Image (cartoon, rainbow, N blue to C red):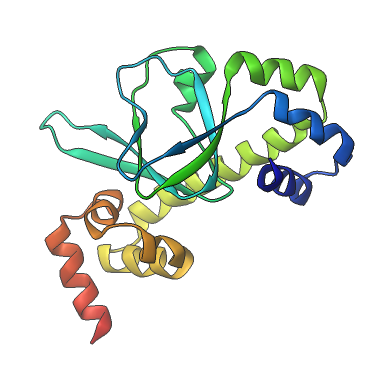
Length: 190
């Protein structure tokens, strides 16, 4: 629980004694590389705080190709948030890119936790705002930047992903073919 408690106190002033109660609401889990946390078409009942590792969120396009739309690593939250909120069917899958440790919480347990520790509403509100702002900026950059500039911007702003994420997943996320990403990388190295 300590990584989550540290993350919360970094963003919101909550008394540590209150945060110690959180352990009752989460379940610690470990996933091997390429193991699924959530599969598209299944009921989405949980969201995940990444303690250690990296995952990618994707969906299957009509042509059967995986389209990566997000990554999450240490201190990030991930889920199919719409399905989580509504208790519905997942439109996305989540797979471990590397061995990953998470703290999982169900929607029911989250409601109970927020009732017990209402100060956490502020934390989740801040996390939502940050995630939504990042999504807005990603959309803007997708429309505004050339493919090369999009790659350069991503590599500059998210160097941890560049080292940890396979190139084919990075290409999918950026909307490139792996071959095109390889060409851009060669240009940037020369």
